[in-house]
Image (cartoon, rainbow over all chains, first blue to last red; front, top):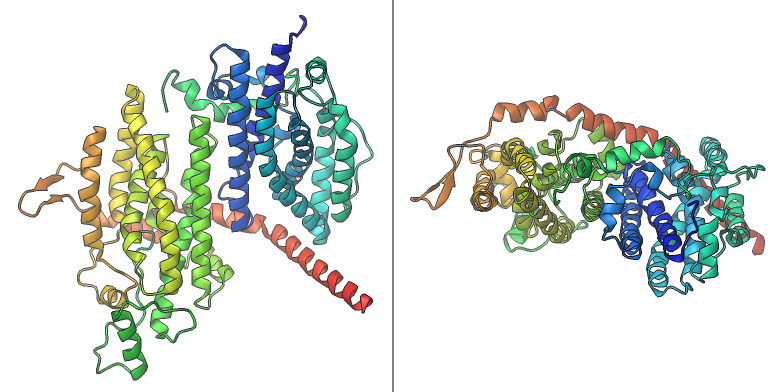
Amino acid sequence: MADKLNKNDALFQFLLRLGDNTLVLGHRVSEWCGHSPVLEEDIALANTALDMIGQTQFWLGLAGEVEGKGRTADNLAFLRDVWDFRNLLLVEQPNGDFGQTMMRQFLFDAWHSIMLGRLMKSSDQRIADIAEKASKEVAYHLERSADTVAGLGDGTEESHAKMQTALDLLWPYIGEMFVGDEVDAEMVKAGVAPDPASLRDEYDALVGRVLADATLTTPDSKFAHKGGKTGMRHSEHLGHILTQMQWLQRAYPGATW
Amino acid sequence: MYAQMIKTAGTGVKSPEEMTDQERAFQARIDADEKIEPKDWMPDDYRATLIRQIGQHAHSEIVGQLPEGNWITRAPTLERKAILLAKVQDEAGHGLYLYCAAETLGISRDELTEDLLSGKMKYSSIFNYPTLNWADMGAVGWLVDGAAIMNQVPLQRTSFGPYSRAMVRICKEESFHQRQGYDIMMKMCQGTEEQKQMAQDAMNRTWFPALMMFGPSDKDSVHSTQSMAWKIKINTNDELRQKFVDQTVPQAEYLGLTIPDENVKLNKKTGHYDYSEPDWSEFFEVIKGNGPCNTERLNARNKAWDDGKWVRDGLLAHARKKAARKASAKTAAE
C-alpha cells in the first residue's frame, strides 16, 4: 500500500478486515465442536460459529464484488495466503481453555457490536444492510459472552483465576481494534465507516461494566500488538489455521464441492 | 437407528392372565395407541427399558458430533462449512431433547452422562468408525442418517409421549441431514477422478457399518418381542435393514457408486434386494470397545467433561451467589 490508495482499494481492504475477522474467529470457535464443557455450550458455540461463517459470506462476497476481478467469497477465503489476510490478531489467538475462548469472544463481540451499530449508518447501503443483519446475531453473541465472562469471573476462586489469566493474556490484543490507518481514513472520508479510535470510549465503558460484574481487574497496560488488520505481521497461528481451512481447495485445485 | 442391542428389562411378554390389573390396563392403553405420559403409571421394566433406549439414543447424538466435527475446520467451501455446523448443532440439540425425554422418567442428564463416560452405557457402533476424507461427510449424511431415519420415522408413533414428540422434531431435521449428505455425494460423483475416488472410498468403508446400525437379527429375541408389544420398538431389525437396502441401492446406482458387496441384486421373487450380512464378529468387537475409534471417542468425551468441570462449577457458584444477593436485597427492602 505504498502507492496512493484509491477509494475502491480501501473499500476492498476494509471489507476484507470485516470478513476475515468473522472467518478466522468462526474457524476458531468451530474447533470446539463436540468438546465443550456442557451440551448447551456445544449448541451455543456451533451457533456462534455458524453466524460468523454466514457473516463472512456476506462480507467477502461484497469484497469480491468491489474488487471486480471475479473472485468469490470462497476464492477469498480459501485461496489467499497469510499476508493477504486482514483480521485482527485477537481472533487468530488459540482457543486455550473455555474461559480463554469466551474472554476472546467477549472482547471481540463488544467491539463488533459497536462497530456494526455504526456501520448500519454507512453511506454504502450494501454495508449498512449487512451490518443490520449481522448486528442482530452479534447482540446475542455479546449477551452470551458477557454473561459467561461475568459468571465465571464471579464464580469460584478457580474460575475467577482462570478468567483473570485469560484477560491478562488477551488484553494486549484489543488495542489494534482502535488504531486507524490510511484505509480507515479513506473510509471515514467517504462516510462508509467510523474512525476506529472513536469507538474506544464506548468500548471501555461496556467492557468495564462487564469486567466489574465479573470482579476482574482490568490490566493497566495500554500496550497493543499490531499487524493483523494491515496484514503486515500476523501471529504464527494464522498459517496453521489456513493449512487446515484451505487444505482441500489447495490439494485439489479447480474441483467443485 | 441410534439405539442398538437394547436389553429389554423383564422376562418377556406376559399373557393377559399373568398380568396384574394395572398391567392389563396399561397394555390396553398401548394397544389402543394412547400415549403414555410421564405421570401415568407404567411397569418398572417399561421405564427401565425406555431409559436405556432413549439414553443410548441421546449419547449417540452427542458422540456423533465428533466424526463430523472432525471435518468442520476443513470443509471445502463456506457454504459446506455452514451446513456442517448447522447439522452438528442440530445433533447436539437432538441430544438435549432426548435427555429431557429421559429425565421425565426419573433419571438426570448427569447420571446418564456419567454412565456414558464410564462405558456403562453405549452409543451407536457407527460413531466408532473414522471419517477419513471429505466424502465421508456425504456418506455419513446419506447412509448413517439415512439408516437412522428408517428407525426414527416409525418411532414417531412410539407409545411414550415425550419420546414420540422428540422424534417428530428430530425427524424433520434428519431428513435435511440426509439430503445434504446425498448432495455432497452427488457433487463428488460428478466431480474429478479424485473426488470420485473419495466417494467410493467412503462408500466402501461405510456400507457395512451402516447395515450394522440396525443391530443383529432379532427375529427370535424375547426381549424384542416385549419392546414391540410396548411399542417402544416398532419394526424388527431385519425389516428396517431390508427397507434401508431397498432404498439405498438405486441411489448408489444413480450416483455411479459400487456397493462393496457382490451379492447385492434385485430378487425378482421377493421384490427386494438380496445382500450379504455384515461381519457380526466385527460388530460385537466394536460394541465391546474394540472399534477403530472407541478409545478416542470416549477419551474425547471424558476430556471435555473433566476439562469443563471448573466451568460448570463456576457458573453454578455464580448462579447461587446471584440468587443469594437477590434474596438479601429483598430482605433489606422489606
